[in-house]
Length: 141
Image 1 (cartoon, one colour):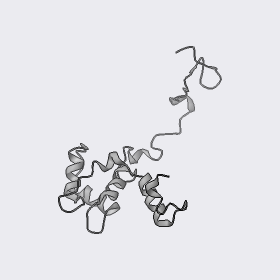
Image 2 (cartoon, helix red, strand yellow):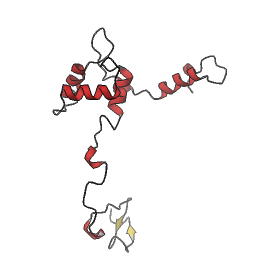
Image 3 (spheres, one colour):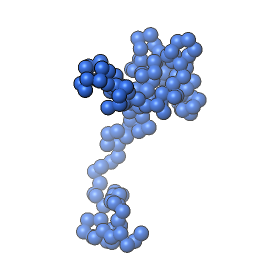
Image 4 (cartoon, helix red, strand yellow):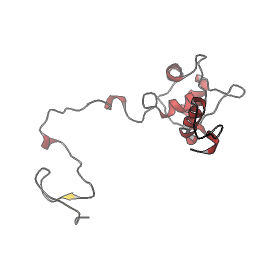
């Protein structure tokens, strides 16, 4: 563990030192750089979050209602996001995922015979025949 997290350097961490170390190891500097609090506040309002999502993020579907809902899920009681809440928002699959929520579960018809589906089986190999009984070979590269 980095020396800055060791507190009294006794070799043991109390809870406060452990929690400080944990937060330090979980820091997401690349996301923290995106955090743009309003001047003098140290937090982002729903208006600032909307501007961020429409501008740098390019999410044309985003509006102030989306921001208010997101802040209600992960934000402070005062209706704003502080830095750690913003990082949580940006990295949480539940609040800001690149995966379509409609695709999290089974969203296709899975009642067809196996031969009706494309099966990606490559592990740096190619099949030399059918998908079930043939050999895998690398000489096709």
